[in-house]
Length: 114
Length: 235
Image 1 (tube, each protein chain N blue to C red):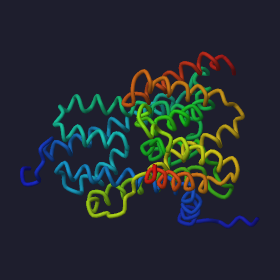
Image 2 (image 1 turned 180 degrees about the vertical axis):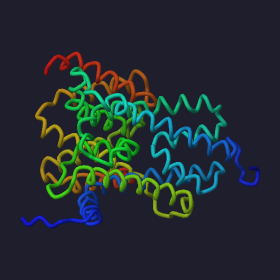
Image 3 (image 1 turned 90 degrees about the vertical axis):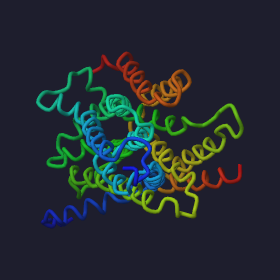
Image 4 (image 1 turned 45 degrees about the vertical axis):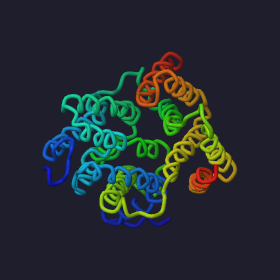
């Protein structure tokens, strides 16, 4: 192990941990399907299919911006400009690729000049 | 239109061709965040091949980053497992909203469940299945393409991360833009801004009150609770 220069968890343990992590992650992904494989979800949960995706998408947008330091310059202005560009491009041209890569290109320029 | 009898192989090719354009933003996003992952892992002293093993088996962006941190800190195994569970518990919510959609995906279902990342979830709930492709093959191709980008990104980072001269800083904004675009499309389709507004408000509140590291699961829980209160009673 020392030959690899690992200071932390030894390689063999890291491999075992990786397999355990994989099972834990798979369990979180498979749990709802295992729960409702034979019976229908209760009605109270059925609204989830309809309303959760837009809520999750809004949450993920905010999550992507979570590490911005709003208190100090440039305090998220580059992200907000690029995000506004994505939204406007998408409402205007309705082309997902153009909106995503237009906004990303603008962002890559902005973080290099502001 | 004439329906050609397609062999399984043909059907697969058509599905991959249909799925690829949809996954291009994820390609860039996953390369952008996969490369630093591989680089971090190797810098922590691990051999390059641990990167594709982790990406193949775990296939979780945040989870793998955190795993490297935990390995480097020599964290105890039980602590690592609990952390991993907390970081990935949001997937339960994703699964709950896909139970109906995954009913008619046939033999693709186990893989689709396994490969359900944030980005793949976003694509599966956001895109329409083309007329000439089976839903299972289409969704499965999206999931498998995304998975391959993630493995390749981590592999490039582990093997060549320190030699890449061009700065990719900022290209991960493609994922932010992808979520924003999918949100706009969903809003247009459902014509119902309330769930997105609840999600937005929950996320901002969770970020302010809880901070960046645990905001995701708190925002999800708060959104579901609010949605049940507001919309739970309708048929």
